[in-house]
Every structure is written in structure tokens, then in C-alpha cells.
Image (tube, rainbow, N blue to C red):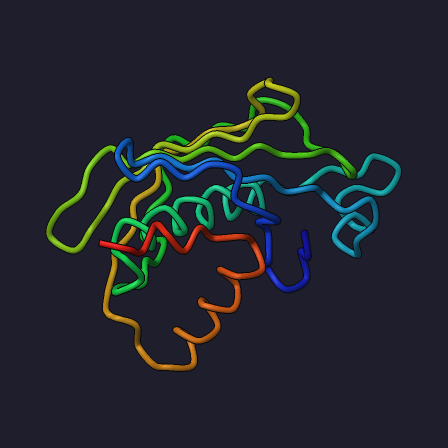
Length: 156
């Protein structure tokens, strides 16, 4: 995980297009400037970054379902609940599933688990639009390779 660059997903573990579901993995770094202020002597992952990890996970699922033809952008966070601390060095399992699609929007249910125990969850809403420029599309293609996005998911 590279928090400073908002690269919060390390790899895709499972992508099930027929079930509209994804599971990814991310290891919280043992050291980061984030933890210097959050909190001295008791470093914990900021809740906003946990929400971002759920949003990125959902984004990869939506990219797959839309065959990389449209880019999802986070539009709303609903019912986000922090259920326990996430600390440096822990490995996150982040799950997302689509619960509604239509009219340029999609909604997902997301969860972050550590060692099988729920640490947070949220309902997220995304708008999606055609890629605004080739630079963003190229960046997303490179990131897809970095996290092991299954290219067969893009085949018809």
C-alpha cells in the first residue's frame, strides 16, 4: 500500500463478474507519515482512508463490469461504520458487491476485514462517465497491471 499516492489496493484476489463481486488485498504499511499524526504512540489507519480503500475496490469492480469503457467516481458514502481499529502491518481483505446499477450510477456494499473479522463497512454510490482523457485511461491500465487485474474479465 502506498498511502501517499492513494494506491490503497495491492492486488485483486477474486473477481466474480457473474456475481458482481470482488475481493482485494492491501497491507497497511508499518511506517508512514500518516501515522506520525494519527496518532502518536497509538498509530491507526484513518477512517477516511479505509473508506477510500473500499471505494477503490468498488471502482475496480465497476471498471470490470463496464469493460474499462467508463470511469467510476465516488459520489456518496452512506452508513459508513468503523467497527474496530486498523493498525500498521495488518493485511486488509476488502470486499465489494454491486447492489444497484442504472442511469449512470451504481451502488455497492463494501466491507474491510482483518483476519476474517469485520473492521468497517459502508454503502457507496458512484457516478460513471466516459474516460475524460487518454492520460487517465493509460494510468488506469498501468494500475490494473500493477494489482493483477484479470485481463480475461475484459473479454466478451
